[in-house]
Image (cartoon, rainbow over all chains, first blue to last red):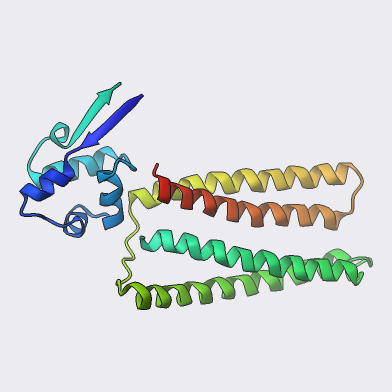
Length: 69
Length: 148
């Protein structure tokens, strides 16, 4: 079964301990959606994935890592 | 808990009250023989329209009460944003609701085919809609809690 991990928590930490609320406001979603993504309970659309990646100035594959188990 | 998730909880609560209200009035109406005459379907329809009106008011009042209680208990300001996750979860709710409503309609047609009264068929459609709404909201709540 495929599994998608993400590095959002680390990227937030590296960006001056940005809060989930701040990130949510910057990419146009609720804090609960960021929380769900970080916990692997929601796979975002491509559009949101790109918005998150661009916000941190990295590529999508640096944020979302696909594991084909 | 997001604004939309709290709305789902409120709707589940409101649905429980509304279903109870519908059952109370419809069962009492049947027991009193109000739907038995030649204008029985019309009497039923007028009652259901009034109950639908009451349901809307109950839903709005409960939503306001829940928002106030939430603010007082948690101190959190309501974040009214609806995002892509809310829309995806809403789609799941619509699917469940659609299936339950379809089952109600098929059940109604089946009951007519078996020779039951028109009001029995109408009640089945109503039940399909009401329980479909609750089922849809439960599915949405499950998706919010367990993930998509």
